[in-house]
Length: 458
Image (cartoon, rainbow, N blue to C red; front, top):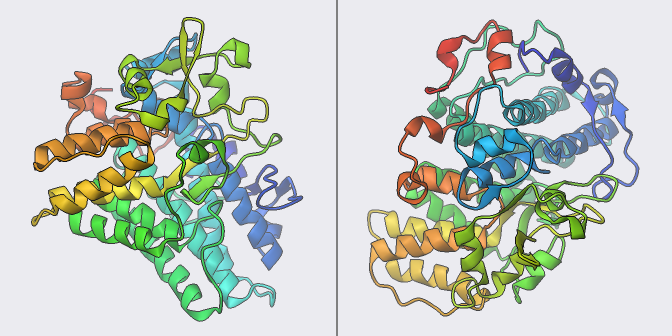
């Protein structure tokens, strides 16, 4: 990263640091310096797994990034003792908020590890690093960097676009903050590069195909591009890419619905971060009550809890809500004993809902197709099909299905912002609250940033 106050963090990020991730590698090393790691095929694969491990961090998808989103929306209410979480629930975030700082820095840690791969893997001379393995490694690195910048763009707006490895304080000097549009342009550039590399491998290798939702793939690139184009309001491309994912039939709606939550790495998932007891996430601990070993830092919002428990609305998704005496709590993440609940990054159900929204909003609407997509989700959830014929009604139905189907996965806040529904639903009229603040500590420490780079209102 750049000249941020936690320079040790980012110098260490230049080293390939990662923790155990049993699903991806049986016995990975715990620390390999970049100067020695990225010189052969084994080092490149270890570095790639290290990047996934940092994506899994509790400062990123292991807890905070999704949590900040559902606390900012009406999905969850903070009832615990941590003020830095209550600030999100109240939409009164301070630029000194510790969760903002740790999440921001963790995302850039992933970016820097991806930068090391992108910058060094092309020059590795090792017969074991075949052309296909080299391309796949680079494709995954571009995907992960694109995902990280996408997450920054939708939460903070523009970012400093660091595209080369940061190994000392001198690296990255002179990089100011880019605009939100420029940041999204970098996301697309990374996803296009990942798509090209994955496609070359699939076209050139016999049997090369999507194998596991635990790793990025061509299917994951298509799915993230569908989401990207949805945010860009490019309805044609959003529909096209969602259709590519659905028609590939490599990920499918799983029935009964309960299996999507009770299982791990099911066909429902396009990209799912897998955890182990040794490398666990913290979602369940923060959602569950003390009788289940949790701290109950937050609970579902009253409206979403009632909707999920209503058979006519939530259907089978009622299993996402639990009760303990008078306490109503969320249990999408329930494996507190083993801490191996997954982080759901991309699911096939989202692709149906992306396509439905795009079909309603494109210049020549396809309301019949949109209704079919919504009903595919409702039918799987064992909820009565809709018979809507009007675009406004369909859009509200799609918003509702996204709310329930993707509950507690970190979508709701960003959905309400991108559709200009935050004021109507949440009562937030100040548009300055629609972006998180840049951590003040990093603005102060970085000579390439100044007070003018802070988001308005902070």
